[in-house]
Amino acid sequence: MSTTAELIADEYPIPSYRFVVSLGEDQVAFKSVSGLDIKHDSIEYKDGTGGVYRMPGQLQKVNITLNKGIFSGANELYNWINSISLNQVEKKDLMISLTNESGSELLVTWNVSNAFPTGLTGPSFDATSNEISVQEITLEADRVSIQAH
Image (cartoon, rainbow, N blue to C red; front, side, top):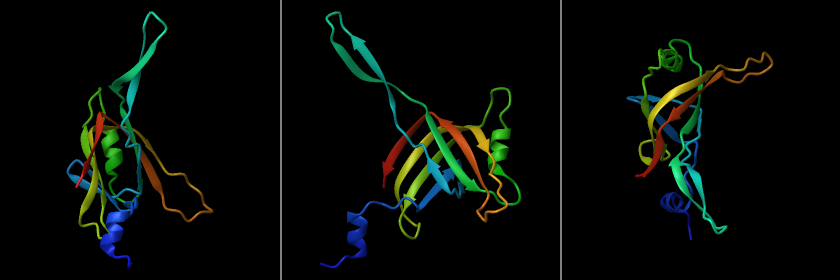
């Protein structure tokens, strides 16, 4: 039996290196994304006879980390975190999507609601290395939902 592109697309997991990130209305190139977790707190209930029962509680906050190369010119991520003042920040929705080989078709999308920056880390400098300069932004969000296309 020969292996065709359609069979590979149907039978094999989607590679994680082909992804796009939409931050609000803009599509931004990132090196890596992590923290797309959906977790609930656990509630423990003890009755008077020694029985212990557990059930899911409230949805936990989402902490997302995005890494992006630094380019000359304006730094949108710095501008976003720097805009926080007097407990006010522009919250944005994110879409992180795995794509097909050409990037023309979305396969799975993680929708992140009401994200705002909580930290921006600059690159590590090393004169003996030839690696690119990467900054890291951490975001906190209300929830993550997954959409298959």
